[in-house]
Image (cartoon, rainbow, N blue to C red; front, side, top):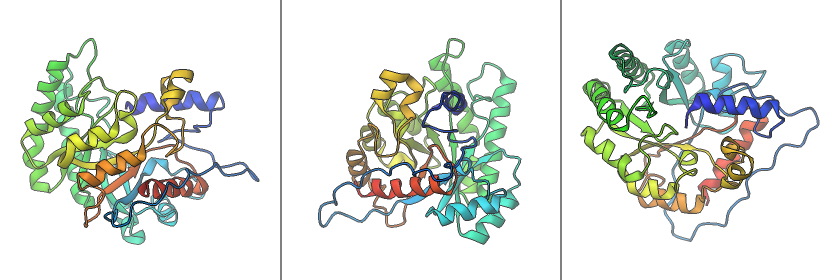
Amino acid sequence: MNRRAFLSAVAASVAGGSVLGAGVRGVAPGLPSGATPPKTAPIPPARPEGAPARTLRKAAMLGMVADDAATTTLDRFKLLKDCGFEGVEVDSPSSTPVQEYLEAQAATGIIAHGVVNSVHWRLHLNNPSTEVRARAVESLRTCLRDAQALGASSVLLVPAVVNADMAYDEAWRLSQEGIKTVLPEADERGVTIAVENVWNNFLLSPLEAARFVDDLASPRAAWHLDIGNVINFGWPEQWARMLGPRVAKLHIKDFSRTKRDKQGLWQGFDVQLGEGDAGWPRVMAALDQIGYSTDPAGRWATAEVRGGDRVRLEQVSRQMDALWRA
């Protein structure tokens, strides 16, 4: 999904008193004094006896941390640790020095496992301007350098945007061209470029998504599967199964088609984890089938939902634990 559009929609929800709060990456207020914490997603039935153990490693987006007591990067890492998270995704390019992240990692044990390209919605690899495309490629190189320095294994990338001025076939050609330019560096640095499914009018089916990765013809090209982003136009378990070993990372969020239909598109995200239309038992079964959720080494699953203070982050952590049991 388009994160800038998401933030705008979330801001509008806050102004209208929506439950959604202040958004995935903006400031989210804590609960008023004496308020009852929002309910946690129900715990699903136990999995069948003998089912393989799930080994997913739980993470959050750093921008989800919005607690008045967490004013520094170190504070935010400590709070994530306290709330039961093991890892975090951070932005690059960023005004926060890599050294600051490294010090916070060393002090807390929280792992910056992934980097998110912070400018890919502004600097498109398929922009008609050769200058903009060159800047987009350079930003991707910056992400790779930062990821290597952090020990992160992936860079999340929105590869292109299709609209009236940027055609679908050109989006494919130019984004493939731009990614292939930096794949040798990705290989050298040991960092995977993980393309994410978002609301960019591009790569709209799992078969096409698989072909896009395959056409890059590199073990350093993979997919960052966002569960919630699929639900508006598809079924995430099908994407997981068809992408299979191409899935490098997961984003965890939910989406309600009922809220979308009754209240508007962006209100579909105004739902707690486990209470939308993701169909988590089917999603988890598909992740089991492709070996992602049962990998002995442990694979990352990162929440990308409304953040907030300690109470909210603890809630998200519990909800994720419940999903793993689906």
